[in-house]
Length: 361
Image 1 (cartoon, rainbow, N blue to C red):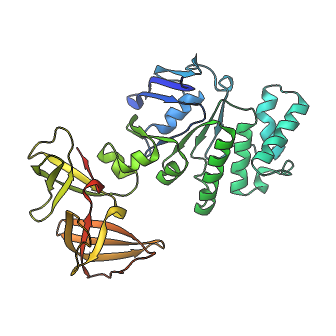
Image 2 (cartoon, rainbow, N blue to C red):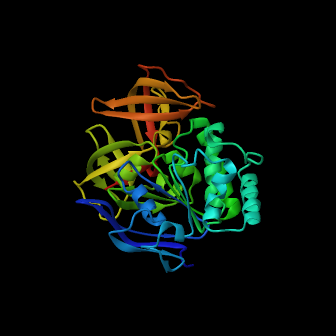
Image 3 (cartoon, one colour):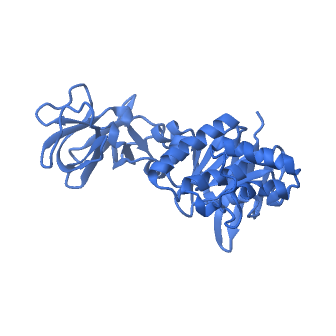
């Protein structure tokens, strides 16, 4: 199936700085794709080139096989929702939403019909005569979304649109946006540095770093099978254990972290004895057992330790367990159904199954 939007070797430089470096990407019709990365990774610059606010230094951008690399933003048929909403403070809600239609010289009656239609869509009918300063943050966000949708764009771009909202409203709005996108079957390219937003909303996520896409995959694959140390560290939380490969058999390899901590992982191609390898283990994948009992089931990777800190986060307890003077693991245990609640100073055994340790070269 032909991509709705394609970027081919797109590069953007500002002086001596390569903000985006040879990014290639295909986005399908109806897909929710998120550009995720730290500040300065190139995600917003990439979005601005798709919108037409920045022109690539080199490369090509195609929309339905039409070259839009140098096309003006208002001729691309692309909608945009900004982080600060960019509503006109002197205009009513009706005039804010109708603005893109007036610029396109749409007939007056059609403007009214389509404006009322999108107000229903974002669940704010009857707000036409209000001004932006009379709206809450969530309502302003909905009006900005309605304005971007009213001219029925081919693609909707969203640049950190929930950044100004409090957490409760942000959690609500991200589901509202996802449901709206699915019901309209529109294509969304979404920029955020919030990994939880990306995991919750996206069909695919492009992780960006230093101007490049370092991994592009669905949320589950990114979380369960990160391709690099950077991705494992950026998506979710991980414990990292570094050591040398001391043993290899047909199915697994042993990484010697210390003399007493030897971690088994699933075998990767091209592993060599003596080479360094980092193992990432998610805190929720680690089990904790009372010191006297040890693992209740067969777990190869298990080590004695002592609880140094207990952090209660509502649905879970987070333990910092020291295994060695230089090795501390963060362990996350769900509160519901927990047999034991550990305290600082308790001696414990921690363990995880071999597939839960992710070997990263």
